[in-house]
Image (cartoon, rainbow, N blue to C red; front, side, top):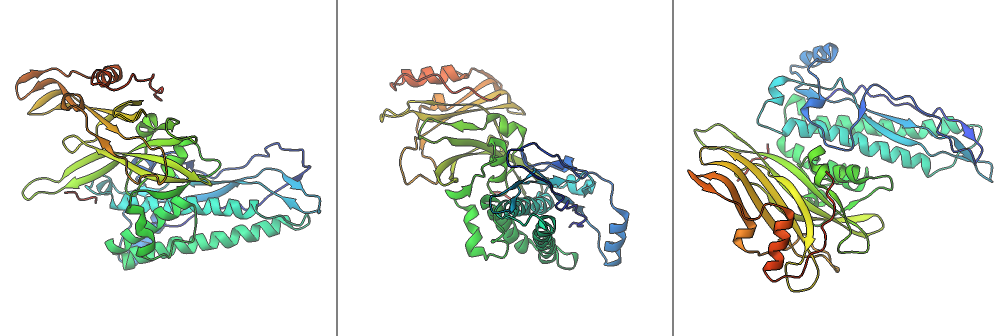
Length: 422
């Protein structure tokens, strides 16, 4: 549920000579840019808009949460063309307004349903901001009327954006009641539109957008995407990307002439058992984004990492020989601290994945078999008995692979420091 009180700063442009490239600045509305990670409930406040609450109460229901995204522009000086017309290169921004609201009981619930719904609203605005930016960049304008011409373009797109936001809510929350089937269809539409930065999929049927659930789906990298923005925007459906994920995600130059991107995501889920409290769980998902040309990448699934229904920490990723083809493979190490009735200590895990070297690129990487004592280890006390992990560091794993008969490994790349989803 949301209320739309957006801010759109329309064109207030200046024209400069072609050689003048200075930034003329911009005035941002109240809010913050969040396109380098996914939203959390901590981004929302608890102070409800009283007027909006009264409007909803008159209709017989109340909002559990809402967001108020704002689209605005950072304008650069216009450039006169030889034909007498002018061009502009604005930078579109999508701000998450801090007066977004959520109730405490929603934040504390065993569910990601409402947060996903609100994030969808923000993602729609994010896509429209990029489409509006491109609509201005791709055209030239008359020197006398450029402000009016640009405002007409932006206003038209923004009206479509508002109408879409309202359509989304009306189909998912008819008369204030949630429709789970409609929500999941819209989740897929909005995710696919975000993957490809297009507004052409918001009315697409299930048969078109359900590809987001498949391994090896194509996604688009924008020219101004850095690693964090790219990994955030093209995240798999129902996953999260935060600072801890960014710290272990990186550019990979090992296998192809163009760099791939190694990214890790968290996914929250819940397990229900009769007579027991709902168990709040998490896991880590690994993906490799493989370039396929023209700014497109294949989102290839690596693996799911989970220990006792909890997401472990990715402690290292590097390349080493682990089969007989002479090409180094991807090694991923994870760790998990345990303190429960059975164990106190740290769990160590190592997994190795076959190299990607030629087309067609796989939708999922192949996991290689390695010795059991290398794959898993525990250090601490397990079932009342002391345990010692044999391979805990990156070097110990690399040395073990050499000892197992594989080729010498090169120095690893430096590190940047039964399930119910809802």
